[in-house]
Image 1: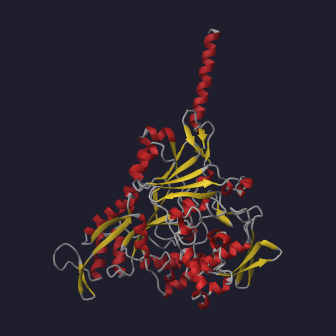
Image 2: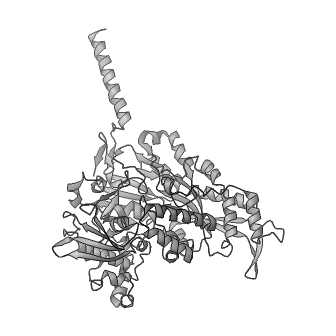
Image 3: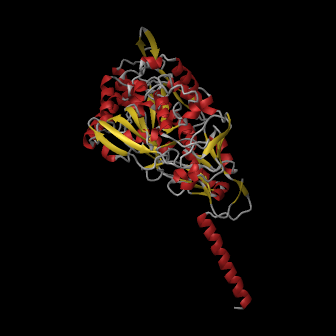
Length: 592
C-alpha cells in the first residue's frame, strides 16, 4: 500500500472514531447556534408563584424550586434530604412528647438586596403559613405540629423548631416550608407583634385583627403570585415575564450567592441563563414544536405518542428519552357527598366496572404498575398483603347496584332510583383536564364499561384552571387525579382528613371521626413496626370504603434535547429532572 493510501486509511479511521464518539456521547458537531436557555413544555399555566397559596404541580415543581428555597430538599436521584439553605441536617432532640430541630442557615445565603437570610425570615414564613386568613391550607397540614420557634441572640442565623411528635417533622420543617424574605412580603411589619404560638392556636384576637386582615388580603393577592417586580426568593432565578397562556421566563441572577457552592449538590447548579416555560395545552401541537426544536424538555403524557416519537428522524437526531420511576400515582376520584355516589355499594360496583388491567395494557402499553393503595409499590414492606385488587367483574357490579336499589324501571337502558323523593337516573360525569389524551382514553374505557350495566357516563374536559376550581369546590363527580408522593414518611392527612375537605386537597369530601383518628395516629407513631400496622389498617379502610379507584404508577416519559447533560433524572420530585442543572455538552454552540 502506498504512503498516500495509508494516510487516507488513517484519516478515515480517525474521522470514524470522532463521529462514533460524537454519536455515543451526543457531542454537538453542527453549526447551529442555540440560545443559552432551556425551553420547557407545560400543559397549562402555573396557578401562581406564592409557595404557600398554590397547590398545582406545575407551580410547585416546575417553577418555584428555581425561585425560592427551603432549608433542605430531596436529592432527585438518591431521594435523600440534603442541605440547601441549611449548613447541615438539623440537630434533632426528643424531649418527652416533643421534638426539637435546630437549624443553622448558611452564612453565604443572601436575598436580592444583598442582606443575609436570617432566622427572622424563617419565623415570618411560618407566621405566613399559620396566619388565620391566608390561603395556606395546602401547606399547613405539613407543619401543623409546630408549636414554637426559638431564636439565639448570639447567632441570628440559628433557630430551633419546637414540635409535637410527628413522623414528618424533618421533611415538614426542612422541605415543605419555603423561606421568604420578610422585608418584601411583610414590608409593613404587620405580623411582627404576633408570636408563632398565638397564630398556631388561631387566637381570636389574631383572626379579628385589622393588621392580620390587611396582611392576608395582600399575601393572597395576585401581586404575590405573578408580579415580576415583586416575586422574590433566594433561588438562582428571578421572574422576568409571564404571558398568560403563552410563556413564563425565569432569568438567572448575576452573582448569585449559591455560585460559590455549585459543587455541593444539584441545588447550587444553575447553568442556563434562562428557563422558559412554554404553555401548549395540546400534545400534538407540543410534539410538533418539540420536533422543530422549539421545546427542549417535555414530559409526554400520551404513551402512544411517546412511543411513536421514535419513528421521527427529527426526534431521533436531536432528542433522547429518560424514564425514571415516578414518585406518584394515578386514580379516579369519587365525590363522597354526591347523592348517587355516596352509597358504598355503588362505589364498590364502580371498582368492579373499572378494568385497570386493560388500561395498563391499552392506554399505558404496559408502561405502568397497578396499585390498590396510596402506598407506592417501592415501599413494599408497608403494603398490606391481604388487600387484593378489585377484579373486573360486571356480574358482581350488577349485583351490588341492585342491592343499592338501582333498577331500570322505565326500560330506557339507564338505571334509576328514587333519591330524596325524586326519580334519578344513574347519569354521572367524568372530568379531566383538556389536552390530556391519556385521561380521555381512560374515561372512554370507563364509559363503555359502565354502559353495560345501565350507567350513563358523560366525559367532560376542562381547561386546567377551571378543572382545579371545580375540584376545590367539590363540583366533580368522578375525575382523573394524579398525586405526587413523598419519598419520606407517609402522612396523608392533607388528602383524606375531614379538615382538608374545604381549602385543602381532600376533594373527595372523604372521612369521618374514625378515619380522622387513624390518620392522626399514623402521623405521630414514631415506632416503625407500630406505624406499619396502622398503615395496614388504613389500607383496609381504603379498600372497604372506596374513597377513590386506584389505577397505577407510571414511569416518567421525558424527552430532552441532546445538547443537554446533567439532567439529575430520578424519581424523587416531579417531573424527574432539575432544569437549572441542564448543562450544554461539549461541541454545541451557545450564545446569550
